[in-house]
Length: 60
Image (cartoon, rainbow, N blue to C red):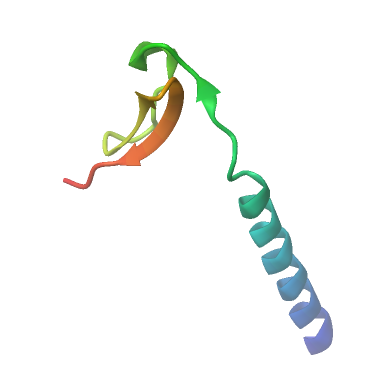
């Protein structure tokens, strides 16, 4: 039972890291900040920089 849990834990970490690495290069084209998606939280927003939507974080 212990080996099974350790195996599932390792597989979960591996898949999570793989998905983060694969999702790194996704940028949305934009001409103005209105073309970018709206963030869920107030401190997390998208900016239009060099015609690409870039995710930014502004701590309070």
